[in-house]
Length: 141
Image (cartoon, rainbow, N blue to C red; front, side):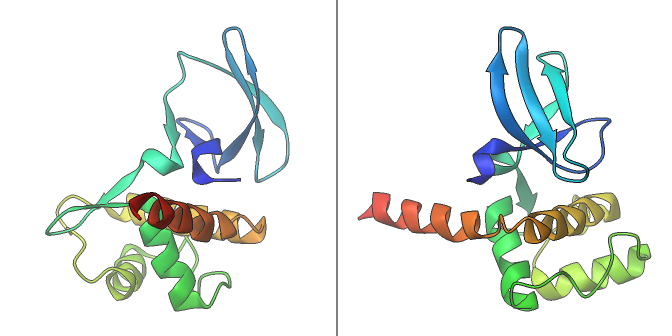
């Protein structure tokens, strides 16, 4: 499953995967507790494949940032928690992405990215990073 099927829903913790379409939206399943929720089109939804992180030179797709975390952690859970202090989170993110834009990437953003990475890792969904990278390489050729 690619990142285009994984969502962040405003006001709800964690990540969700799309289960099925409905007339007024869709049904999504939480990666935290596996509960299914009905999501209408009025909800503020972010698809992970559409999210980017600001760097000093460009906007880097979230999948690239997650891949960098995966490489740093050798595919394991992060060495820090998303509940750590702002300074710890920023120091960790600087190791992963040294040129991130500190004025536009907030500690709350880093907290979400670390939490999302750990959720995806826990559910063995990080392979989607490799698949989507391989697919985009194939399309370029």
